Amino acid sequence: MAGQIRAPRGTRDRLRDEAPAWQRAEATASDLSARYAFDRIDTPFFERIELFSRGLGEASEAVEKQMFRVGGALGTDEERAEWALRPEPTAGIVRAYLEHGMHVQPGPLRLWLLGPMFRYDRPQAGRYRQFTQWDVEVIGDSGPMVDAELIELGHRFFAELGVLNVVAYLNSIGDANCRPAYRAALVDYFSARSDRLTDDSRRRLQDNPLRVLDDKDLDPDLAEAAPRSIDHLCDACRAHLNGVRSLLDALGVRYELDHRIVRGLDYYTRTTFEYFVAGRRGQQQALGGGGRYDGLVEQLGGPSTPGIGFGIGIDRTVLAADEQGVVTPPEAPLLVVVSVDPEAYEPRMRVAGELRQAGLRVRADGSSRKLGKQLDSAARLGARWAVIVGGELERGSVILRDLAAGEQREVALSEVPAAIG
Ligand code: AMP
Image: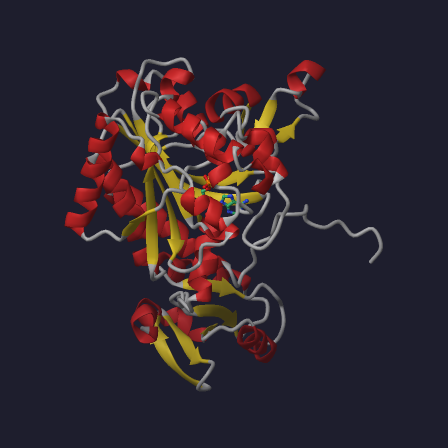
């Protein structure tokens, strides 16, 4: 077919086969958010570019390389250049927090969001230009209990979905007090070995030396021997990290310290973490990540306020579940309402309506074919049951046909749910 239009590169249509696993992941995220007493927030899919460059940092990968600029019908030339699809949710949530004066509400605020994020990156397995994140944020709580609570929440999500063997890799990257010395130590260390760095890392070394550590092509020996932030923490940051660790230990939450978890964005302070399936630490395999951002609210023009959050990728979570052979519970059995009289549309609709009201999953045949054809088509759709509407409807009954067994019997309409149970 010449000229056929395809989905944009790095995006996917999610079809019927994938839908149940996605729905389960999204429902679990939503349910856990409610159980952990988070309030839902939805922010626009696009925002001013300045929000991201100020919030995430000019030298972050998301701003430097992956901004998905949008324009077109948005107005004047000047206005067009100013928007980008959101690459991550936190900056937008903090913007909304300030815009709606949420900082005067009794806190800490607990917010959650589920939706698409956009990064203009080279697509590959597990890396898309549009992907979905479940995100939670706690604003106004300096921890360390909330840090441990969020790390535990992510674990519970994977556990409830049946994704096994997940580890939270944990680090602390310090704060405005102690980070400058750590940055300087990294710059010294990597500058002396710059011939072993990638071009990208050499370029980034002065602006954002922490990011050299999460360069996927960094020589592992060089990474191993690099200065570690936890050796440079000030007393307050060290006490915070110890507090988080002792809570995780006491609760039996699985984590490992890892000095390469620095996260790529400027707004992070202190606690940073990422989830992986143990032993699967490739570039496109992080299932989720998060951290504390005690400076972000102020950076975006608000009062100094601590914050922490995580984003878990639903795409990769569903992939991991699939790889581990997690079986999504089957959908409810399908019933198709057919009728003896090929033209009896109204009774089919009425019966279908009553069965749906009772909570069943129901299609009604909308054709004017003979009963035999309607039954064939129900079987082809994968229906387990056909509900045949005929003269019995006068006494409130239908014929319930088990399409697998080829058996049928008269059943009162109100008894259908029990009869198929
Ligand atoms: P990040 O803030 O970049 O660590 O993203 C948080 C989570 O979102 C990651 O751990 C992934 O699960 C998911 N994620 C990030 N970028 C992508 C992408 N391009 N495609 C699919 N999932 C992604």
